[in-house]
Image: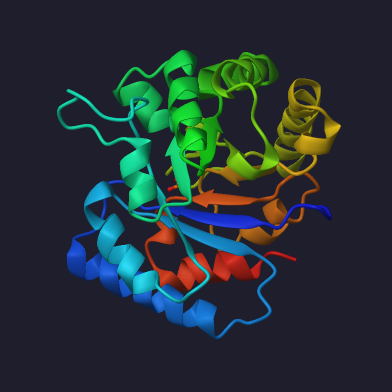
Length: 254
Ligand code: PGA
């Protein structure tokens, strides 16, 4: 992590939590954050759609940001079951995750679809957390850098800026498995992402874009991962479901 970028620790709650759970997790975090006046990190939580409003209420007055896990690219219309970026902005969201591998796999989302969602998020004044990452087969086949490069080129809207764009590198085989790449492997991919962003957006914007690592980050491994030069925070799934673990990960930011 280097100077112009403040680490972002974002919790992806996925399809977890009923109202009571979401409320108590959010107020627990809110209390911790209110007592932490010297935080060197930004904290965000991305609950399921059903909990966003209640979590937003529980976070009121704290510095923790609210996010969502997906959106539809259109502003409104006949899209039964979908939620637009405008609706999420209206609830007070600052971030929307787009292109998570679970969406790409379970809902067949392509880079083009992800790019359209990211553009919709940016158009509403929020930041898109754009997820990319290779499968285990691609990693074993030596294709990681090519895959990441092509997902980045296809998923990041043009123009994008540091203020409205976050990249999350999440190797699919590391998500929810307890396995993580080595620090050298993470360093290599993040350096590539930074170089590609520099080529696409120009050095001035690219230097401010936060590039998160995601995939089995936990209080034990967070310190090593977050210390890497181009790792500017984490996108945390399982370990974001308890205030204790999520907070412990945030404390690893230096
Ligand atoms: P995990 O999930 O931390 O449970 O591996 C990360 C993610 O999918 O964003």
